[in-house]
Image (cartoon, rainbow, N blue to C red; front, side):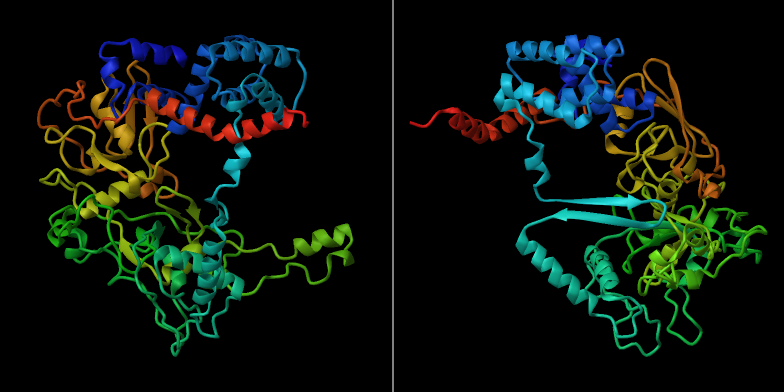
Length: 560
């Protein structure tokens, strides 16, 4: 990897590319990420360690190459010694580290970190990485559990902000009527989502026709796109005697009927994927506002609707009721055991745990666009107060007569791809550009020639020589790197929604593609080069260590 970076930096014109937004470092990381199938962040970490071993810790690199050190240990050593700048100190540190870790002793990762920090403190006190101070800094971390459809939030904030949050959560939790089945803790949890969506109240879940609480909250400015089939939305319906069902949008089936519907043979759309936005005031992800004519003058009136063959349950274990499963998400905490744990023998405990085997869900799971898989009961719960729009497969529709795709086509491409289509990249499609595989106007604006690329990989494909891509009608993309290696990426919807990967109309180019802008005439540029930014971060962290170094030196002076 270090050889690849050295080759890129010694190539013709490399000095000019150092200030490109997609510079030499980013291009090498892209090649590493494609080869290993990892994200740009992981590739950056690998390349950073390679450069540190090559330029700073050559003796340690020899131990690593011989297999005496694991990469986990080497990565920790490289990160903990990044602040050492003096060449003599680096040489002494490399020798000391090789003596300690080349002896074959076994250490835990905590012991490795303690040893490395002790050596750094001895040779350069200003270079100690103080992770404890960073860990205590204000932050918010979100951990998503793909299996259960839930997430955990861990936050550290100021006491005044925490008090305001506590009071706001309580206030929102009390905006529902007394018949809401959730306890206060569950409503405070739901209040976090209400705050995120900008709502001024919680949706009441009593589903009563005479509920005194406002049933639908005010719209906010945050949109969460969830792709689901119609059978997962049916669980949002209320009882016939209860409150109304909120479908969040008019009609069912096609938004604008296609040829089959106009001929009176509208296909069954019950299992068709639908784009569900957890917001009452829906918006699209288009880069700029699109008029109503763009929705009609696009592919919707010319598409061939694809009938899904999925969602039909085979004979097997008993299937539950989606509405009951959705309602089971709220209410008090369930006690899985009828007696205290101490009253059971081991065999009795196993029998009690297995007494209720559970039930299958009758509906298919969905997925947050570019995010986690969502169980159908969670989708049904969210669908009660969401905007629901059909997701239209363009079929064999002809190209659109403009550069920017219509709203319907853009939504389909994002839902089909789900993430950036570069090998190993996981950036969500909602934050990605829609790229013409064959550049426009040589390449048409149609599904078989459009894919999602995050901005860094979009710049890489557009400006860097040697990179090329070819897109198939089913959405697969074949990438070729400057060394001639090829990588195949599939649309993110291929597993859960394979009907979105049904082939679309083949691409017919209107002439040879224009050459790449390898001179970078329109490439966004950095204010400073990457090496300067890295040196500045090292200086900043070393200066932050000054008070601790002074305090340590003062403690070493004997009192008189």
